[in-house]
Length: 430
Image (cartoon, rainbow, N blue to C red; front, side, top):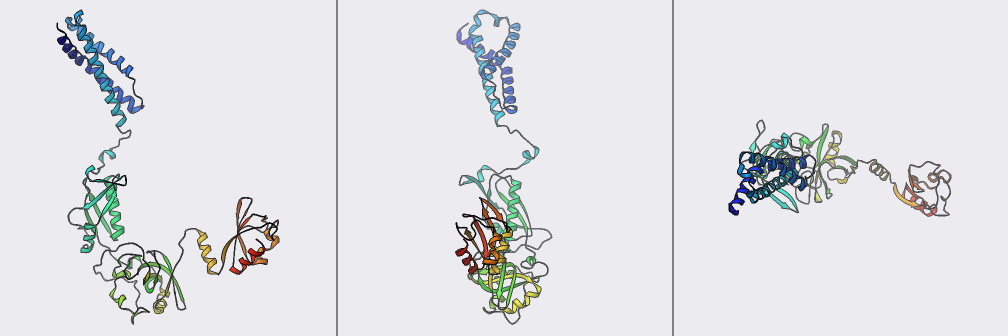
């Protein structure tokens, strides 16, 4: 038989006997890579494939005596090469599949919807998606209809989010952002794979009145507004013979209305209120009123958040009922921003400064009045009218040291007292 015919016959035998070895090699390659992370060596794949192919070839030789003839050597060699190539290829594909299949697959992961790659934009090396509102913004059942301005703000707004989150998380983030920026009561969002959102929302049920704490009254005061004020800041209004501390509810400055510290202010929040603008700049009108009651249900522009730009303006603060009347009669006031630090050190600093005290860090000098003595021996408080808040001795800090605290040259002290007392202490003792 001619050589080309023998080669074709060998390819036929190789495919016929190599299907099972290739299948077994691929499955074993996947199992080993997926569960153990180990790749089966190529020599092992060759040995396994030849062993299985030998069994198959032996069974074929028993059924067909022509296969056992001696002149079929080219066909047999070709068949062996085909079996090995099929087995090695199947093993490589199984090994690749085992490396790419996730190790943990849950039904929740299978059900998760993901964004289409066509809507993902690369910005700064990271993917982001721009969500567009499809169709008209709907109203939520049981709530009043949305104002036209709010609908336009939702439909025309630019809403961008990270693209590496599931659609369910993206819907939650979009709803929370709408609630925060537009102060909506409730929002329902549905986003498809093309980043098109279907939105239904409920308008705010109240403006300023819902932010006034129980037992408080909201009072607006003309003042020089500091830069960077935001809603929720604690401020102190200083007027003639009156000092009132309260929480900032709204503010405007620089000739531009500001809600919650920046941006446009609706009527209920002390912004574009025609009555408020008509009042004299140096005081109140003839009928001063607090702003703490429920406002009339009139459509308002969607508020925006931010901070004040500074300058002449008006602030609205929540104060006690007993302080609302005197503050209204006081007219113009000065605005001081109070620290809202969560650490007690800030509160202590405020109290001491309020009492006219100052802080200073001093170093004990060699040969001075403190060198080689204790705080009690020197009588720091009695002799110099200052108090030691902290002392650093031998690289260790001691807060509120006792009279037995020893001092040496190079030690550092934090002392508090009046400016004159601190100057006298620095010249004599340190």
